[in-house]
Image (cartoon, rainbow, N blue to C red; front, top):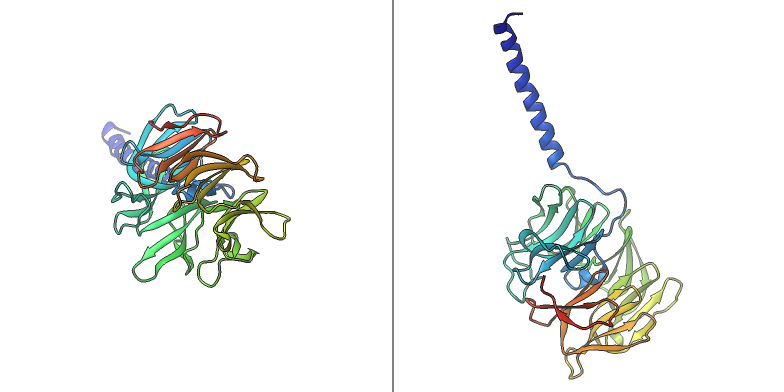
Length: 337
Protein backbone atom coordinates (compact mmCIF):
# COMPACT_ATOMS: atom_id res chain seq x y z
CA UNK A 1 0.00 0.00 0.00
CA UNK A 2 1.56 3.29 -1.07
CA UNK A 3 1.68 6.39 1.15
CA UNK A 4 -1.24 8.11 -0.59
CA UNK A 5 -3.53 5.12 -0.16
CA UNK A 6 -2.36 4.66 3.46
CA UNK A 7 -3.16 8.30 4.31
CA UNK A 8 -6.61 7.92 2.79
CA UNK A 9 -7.18 5.01 5.18
CA UNK A 10 -5.59 6.44 8.31
CA UNK A 11 -7.24 9.87 8.28
CA UNK A 12 -10.85 8.57 8.30
CA UNK A 13 -9.88 5.93 10.88
CA UNK A 14 -8.36 8.60 13.12
CA UNK A 15 -11.48 10.74 12.78
CA UNK A 16 -13.69 7.79 13.68
CA UNK A 17 -11.54 6.95 16.72
CA UNK A 18 -11.63 10.58 17.82
CA UNK A 19 -15.41 10.68 17.54
CA UNK A 20 -15.75 7.43 19.49
CA UNK A 21 -13.30 8.62 22.14
CA UNK A 22 -14.99 11.99 22.50
CA UNK A 23 -18.41 10.33 22.76
CA UNK A 24 -17.09 7.96 25.44
CA UNK A 25 -15.53 10.86 27.32
CA UNK A 26 -18.79 12.81 27.27
CA UNK A 27 -20.74 9.75 28.37
CA UNK A 28 -18.54 9.00 31.36
CA UNK A 29 -18.25 12.67 32.24
CA UNK A 30 -22.01 13.22 32.21
CA UNK A 31 -23.31 9.88 33.43
CA UNK A 32 -24.94 9.76 36.86
CA UNK A 33 -23.43 7.51 39.51
CA UNK A 34 -26.30 5.97 41.47
CA UNK A 35 -26.30 4.88 45.11
CA UNK A 36 -26.37 1.18 45.99
CA UNK A 37 -28.78 1.54 48.92
CA UNK A 38 -31.08 3.94 50.76
CA UNK A 39 -28.55 6.67 51.50
CA UNK A 40 -29.91 9.57 53.59
CA UNK A 41 -28.47 12.94 52.64
CA UNK A 42 -28.61 14.86 55.93
CA UNK A 43 -29.96 14.60 59.47
CA UNK A 44 -33.61 15.47 60.27
CA UNK A 45 -32.61 18.22 62.71
CA UNK A 46 -30.39 19.96 60.17
CA UNK A 47 -33.03 19.83 57.43
CA UNK A 48 -35.72 21.22 59.73
CA UNK A 49 -33.28 24.07 60.35
CA UNK A 50 -32.82 24.79 56.62
CA UNK A 51 -29.98 22.32 56.05
CA UNK A 52 -27.18 24.89 56.18
CA UNK A 53 -24.62 22.26 57.23
CA UNK A 54 -24.20 18.68 56.06
CA UNK A 55 -21.49 16.20 57.00
CA UNK A 56 -20.55 13.25 54.81
CA UNK A 57 -17.51 11.01 55.16
CA UNK A 58 -15.58 13.52 57.28
CA UNK A 59 -16.28 16.56 55.08
CA UNK A 60 -18.63 19.39 56.03
CA UNK A 61 -20.59 21.07 53.24
CA UNK A 62 -22.11 24.35 54.32
CA UNK A 63 -23.77 27.61 53.38
CA UNK A 64 -21.12 30.22 54.19
CA UNK A 65 -22.64 33.19 56.08
CA UNK A 66 -19.44 35.19 55.43
CA UNK A 67 -19.75 34.86 51.64
CA UNK A 68 -23.38 35.36 50.58
CA UNK A 69 -24.36 31.85 51.74
CA UNK A 70 -22.43 30.28 48.83
CA UNK A 71 -21.60 26.56 48.86
CA UNK A 72 -18.37 25.73 50.73
CA UNK A 73 -16.65 22.72 52.25
CA UNK A 74 -14.29 22.18 55.20
CA UNK A 75 -13.00 19.31 57.29
CA UNK A 76 -14.60 18.28 60.59
CA UNK A 77 -12.21 20.53 62.57
CA UNK A 78 -13.12 23.60 60.51
CA UNK A 79 -9.95 23.62 58.43
CA UNK A 80 -9.29 23.36 54.68
CA UNK A 81 -12.12 25.79 53.87
CA UNK A 82 -12.90 25.71 50.14
CA UNK A 83 -15.43 27.55 48.00
CA UNK A 84 -17.21 25.04 45.77
CA UNK A 85 -19.82 27.04 43.89
CA UNK A 86 -21.35 30.51 43.85
CA UNK A 87 -24.94 29.52 44.50
CA UNK A 88 -26.91 30.61 47.56
CA UNK A 89 -27.62 27.22 49.11
CA UNK A 90 -29.86 25.65 51.72
CA UNK A 91 -31.28 22.16 52.39
CA UNK A 92 -27.88 20.62 51.62
CA UNK A 93 -27.68 16.84 51.15
CA UNK A 94 -24.67 14.73 50.20
CA UNK A 95 -23.61 11.26 49.11
CA UNK A 96 -20.27 9.90 47.86
CA UNK A 97 -20.49 11.62 44.47
CA UNK A 98 -22.77 14.64 44.67
CA UNK A 99 -24.01 17.51 46.78
CA UNK A 100 -27.70 18.30 46.42
CA UNK A 101 -29.20 21.60 47.47
CA UNK A 102 -31.90 24.20 46.98
CA UNK A 103 -30.58 27.18 45.03
CA UNK A 104 -32.03 30.54 46.01
CA UNK A 105 -29.93 33.22 44.36
CA UNK A 106 -32.55 35.90 45.04
CA UNK A 107 -32.15 35.47 48.81
CA UNK A 108 -31.63 38.42 51.10
CA UNK A 109 -30.17 38.38 54.61
CA UNK A 110 -33.35 37.05 56.21
CA UNK A 111 -34.83 34.95 53.42
CA UNK A 112 -32.43 32.07 52.92
CA UNK A 113 -35.29 29.58 52.62
CA UNK A 114 -37.90 31.75 50.87
CA UNK A 115 -39.34 30.54 47.58
CA UNK A 116 -38.46 32.83 44.67
CA UNK A 117 -39.76 32.23 41.17
CA UNK A 118 -37.12 31.58 38.46
CA UNK A 119 -34.22 31.76 40.93
CA UNK A 120 -35.16 28.96 43.31
CA UNK A 121 -34.46 25.45 42.03
CA UNK A 122 -33.27 22.01 43.04
CA UNK A 123 -29.66 21.37 42.03
CA UNK A 124 -26.91 18.74 42.03
CA UNK A 125 -23.21 19.59 42.27
CA UNK A 126 -20.74 16.94 41.09
CA UNK A 127 -17.73 16.45 43.34
CA UNK A 128 -15.86 15.00 40.36
CA UNK A 129 -16.61 17.44 37.53
CA UNK A 130 -17.41 20.54 39.70
CA UNK A 131 -20.45 21.13 37.49
CA UNK A 132 -24.03 21.85 38.53
CA UNK A 133 -27.08 20.14 37.07
CA UNK A 134 -30.57 21.51 37.70
CA UNK A 135 -32.87 18.66 38.73
CA UNK A 136 -36.01 20.80 39.00
CA UNK A 137 -36.08 24.35 37.69
CA UNK A 138 -39.27 25.16 39.59
CA UNK A 139 -39.27 26.58 43.14
CA UNK A 140 -38.33 23.82 45.58
CA UNK A 141 -37.80 23.59 49.32
CA UNK A 142 -37.18 21.05 52.12
CA UNK A 143 -35.25 18.58 49.95
CA UNK A 144 -34.19 15.24 51.41
CA UNK A 145 -32.10 12.53 49.72
CA UNK A 146 -33.44 9.00 50.15
CA UNK A 147 -31.52 6.46 48.07
CA UNK A 148 -31.56 7.62 44.45
CA UNK A 149 -34.42 10.09 44.82
CA UNK A 150 -34.83 13.54 46.30
CA UNK A 151 -38.13 14.12 48.07
CA UNK A 152 -39.10 17.78 48.40
CA UNK A 153 -41.85 20.38 48.40
CA UNK A 154 -42.44 21.66 44.87
CA UNK A 155 -44.27 24.88 44.00
CA UNK A 156 -46.17 25.78 40.87
CA UNK A 157 -48.84 28.39 40.18
CA UNK A 158 -51.26 25.63 39.17
CA UNK A 159 -50.98 23.33 42.19
CA UNK A 160 -49.27 25.55 44.82
CA UNK A 161 -47.03 23.53 47.20
CA UNK A 162 -47.12 19.73 46.92
CA UNK A 163 -44.88 16.77 47.71
CA UNK A 164 -42.63 15.74 44.80
CA UNK A 165 -39.73 13.46 44.10
CA UNK A 166 -37.11 13.36 41.35
CA UNK A 167 -34.38 10.84 40.57
CA UNK A 168 -30.83 12.07 41.14
CA UNK A 169 -30.20 12.15 37.38
CA UNK A 170 -33.14 14.55 36.91
CA UNK A 171 -35.52 11.94 35.51
CA UNK A 172 -38.83 10.64 36.85
CA UNK A 173 -39.97 13.95 38.34
CA UNK A 174 -43.43 13.32 39.74
CA UNK A 175 -45.95 14.44 42.32
CA UNK A 176 -46.06 12.02 45.26
CA UNK A 177 -48.89 13.67 47.17
CA UNK A 178 -51.04 16.78 46.83
CA UNK A 179 -50.11 17.81 50.38
CA UNK A 180 -46.82 19.61 51.16
CA UNK A 181 -45.44 17.11 53.68
CA UNK A 182 -42.04 17.87 55.18
CA UNK A 183 -39.56 15.15 54.20
CA UNK A 184 -36.81 16.12 56.66
CA UNK A 185 -36.94 13.00 58.80
CA UNK A 186 -35.58 10.14 56.71
CA UNK A 187 -34.27 6.90 58.15
CA UNK A 188 -33.22 4.37 55.54
CA UNK A 189 -36.00 3.83 53.02
CA UNK A 190 -38.59 5.47 55.29
CA UNK A 191 -39.47 9.03 56.10
CA UNK A 192 -41.66 10.35 58.88
CA UNK A 193 -44.07 13.25 58.62
CA UNK A 194 -47.11 14.81 60.25
CA UNK A 195 -50.44 15.30 58.54
CA UNK A 196 -51.22 18.83 57.38
CA UNK A 197 -54.75 18.67 55.92
CA UNK A 198 -57.20 16.32 57.65
CA UNK A 199 -55.11 15.60 60.75
CA UNK A 200 -51.73 16.10 62.40
CA UNK A 201 -50.96 12.44 63.10
CA UNK A 202 -47.42 11.10 62.76
CA UNK A 203 -46.98 8.87 59.70
CA UNK A 204 -44.28 6.66 58.25
CA UNK A 205 -43.92 6.44 54.45
CA UNK A 206 -42.11 3.54 52.80
CA UNK A 207 -40.43 5.06 49.73
CA UNK A 208 -39.99 1.59 48.23
CA UNK A 209 -43.73 1.33 47.55
CA UNK A 210 -45.19 4.73 48.50
CA UNK A 211 -47.36 3.30 51.27
CA UNK A 212 -47.96 5.15 54.56
CA UNK A 213 -49.28 4.16 57.97
CA UNK A 214 -49.96 5.97 61.26
CA UNK A 215 -47.33 5.87 63.99
CA UNK A 216 -49.18 8.01 66.54
CA UNK A 217 -52.55 9.78 66.51
CA UNK A 218 -52.77 13.33 67.83
CA UNK A 219 -52.02 16.95 67.07
CA UNK A 220 -48.30 16.73 66.40
CA UNK A 221 -45.58 18.53 64.45
CA UNK A 222 -41.98 18.10 63.19
CA UNK A 223 -41.17 14.41 63.76
CA UNK A 224 -37.49 13.46 63.94
CA UNK A 225 -36.74 9.73 63.87
CA UNK A 226 -33.61 7.72 64.56
CA UNK A 227 -33.10 3.99 65.11
CA UNK A 228 -34.31 4.16 68.71
CA UNK A 229 -37.17 6.65 68.87
CA UNK A 230 -39.26 9.34 67.21
CA UNK A 231 -39.30 12.87 68.64
CA UNK A 232 -41.99 15.45 67.81
CA UNK A 233 -43.83 18.47 69.15
CA UNK A 234 -47.19 18.08 70.92
CA UNK A 235 -49.32 20.99 69.70
CA UNK A 236 -52.04 20.29 72.27
CA UNK A 237 -49.52 20.59 75.09
CA UNK A 238 -48.00 24.00 74.27
CA UNK A 239 -45.68 22.54 71.61
CA UNK A 240 -43.74 20.57 74.19
CA UNK A 241 -41.13 18.09 72.98
CA UNK A 242 -42.15 14.44 73.31
CA UNK A 243 -40.50 11.13 72.56
CA UNK A 244 -41.92 7.79 71.45
CA UNK A 245 -39.69 4.73 71.62
CA UNK A 246 -40.01 1.98 69.05
CA UNK A 247 -42.01 -0.17 71.45
CA UNK A 248 -43.91 2.60 73.28
CA UNK A 249 -47.66 2.85 72.88
CA UNK A 250 -47.79 6.58 73.64
CA UNK A 251 -45.33 9.50 73.58
CA UNK A 252 -43.60 10.73 76.75
CA UNK A 253 -42.67 14.33 77.52
CA UNK A 254 -38.96 15.22 77.31
CA UNK A 255 -39.23 19.04 77.62
CA UNK A 256 -42.43 20.76 78.77
CA UNK A 257 -41.38 24.22 77.48
CA UNK A 258 -42.82 25.59 74.24
CA UNK A 259 -40.31 24.56 71.57
CA UNK A 260 -39.75 26.67 68.45
CA UNK A 261 -37.06 24.50 66.82
CA UNK A 262 -34.86 21.59 67.84
CA UNK A 263 -32.12 19.23 66.69
CA UNK A 264 -31.48 15.76 68.11
CA UNK A 265 -27.71 15.09 68.15
CA UNK A 266 -26.92 11.65 69.57
CA UNK A 267 -27.96 11.68 73.24
CA UNK A 268 -28.40 15.49 73.37
CA UNK A 269 -31.17 17.71 72.07
CA UNK A 270 -30.51 21.38 71.29
CA UNK A 271 -33.61 23.54 71.16
CA UNK A 272 -34.98 27.08 71.16
CA UNK A 273 -37.64 27.69 73.79
CA UNK A 274 -40.35 30.34 74.16
CA UNK A 275 -39.51 32.85 71.42
CA UNK A 276 -42.50 35.01 72.40
CA UNK A 277 -41.72 35.14 76.13
CA UNK A 278 -39.13 36.94 78.26
CA UNK A 279 -37.42 33.66 79.10
CA UNK A 280 -36.57 32.80 75.46
CA UNK A 281 -33.30 30.87 75.31
CA UNK A 282 -31.21 28.38 73.39
CA UNK A 283 -31.02 25.27 75.55
CA UNK A 284 -29.94 21.65 75.62
CA UNK A 285 -31.17 18.51 77.34
CA UNK A 286 -30.38 14.81 77.28
CA UNK A 287 -32.77 12.61 75.32
CA UNK A 288 -34.05 11.13 78.60
CA UNK A 289 -35.01 14.62 79.86
CA UNK A 290 -32.05 15.05 82.24
CA UNK A 291 -29.26 17.64 82.35
CA UNK A 292 -31.36 20.62 81.22
CA UNK A 293 -29.06 23.57 80.39
CA UNK A 294 -29.52 27.15 79.24
CA UNK A 295 -26.80 27.92 76.69
CA UNK A 296 -27.72 31.51 75.73
CA UNK A 297 -30.65 33.71 76.61
CA UNK A 298 -32.53 35.25 73.69
CA UNK A 299 -33.98 34.08 70.40
CA UNK A 300 -31.91 31.81 68.12
CA UNK A 301 -32.59 29.74 65.01
CA UNK A 302 -30.91 27.67 62.25
CA UNK A 303 -29.69 25.06 64.75
CA UNK A 304 -27.43 22.77 62.71
CA UNK A 305 -24.97 20.14 63.92
CA UNK A 306 -22.01 18.11 62.70
CA UNK A 307 -20.03 15.41 64.49
CA UNK A 308 -18.10 18.02 66.49
CA UNK A 309 -19.98 21.32 66.56
CA UNK A 310 -23.40 22.91 66.89
CA UNK A 311 -24.06 25.99 64.75
CA UNK A 312 -26.81 28.57 65.16
CA UNK A 313 -27.66 32.22 64.54
CA UNK A 314 -29.66 34.97 66.20
CA UNK A 315 -33.17 35.04 64.82
CA UNK A 316 -33.29 37.39 61.83
CA UNK A 317 -29.49 37.71 61.62
CA UNK A 318 -28.53 34.92 59.23
CA UNK A 319 -25.29 36.56 58.13
CA UNK A 320 -23.62 35.79 61.44
CA UNK A 321 -23.47 32.29 62.89
CA UNK A 322 -22.10 30.93 66.15
CA UNK A 323 -20.56 27.60 67.01
CA UNK A 324 -19.92 25.55 70.12
CA UNK A 325 -18.55 22.05 70.77
CA UNK A 326 -21.20 19.38 70.42
CA UNK A 327 -20.83 18.14 74.00
CA UNK A 328 -22.00 21.54 75.29
CA UNK A 329 -19.06 22.03 77.67
CA UNK A 330 -17.11 24.52 75.53
CA UNK A 331 -17.65 28.21 74.99
CA UNK A 332 -19.71 29.81 72.24
CA UNK A 333 -17.71 31.56 69.52
CA UNK A 334 -18.40 33.27 66.20
CA UNK A 335 -18.20 30.95 63.20
CA UNK A 336 -15.63 32.48 60.85
CA UNK A 337 -14.70 29.97 58.15
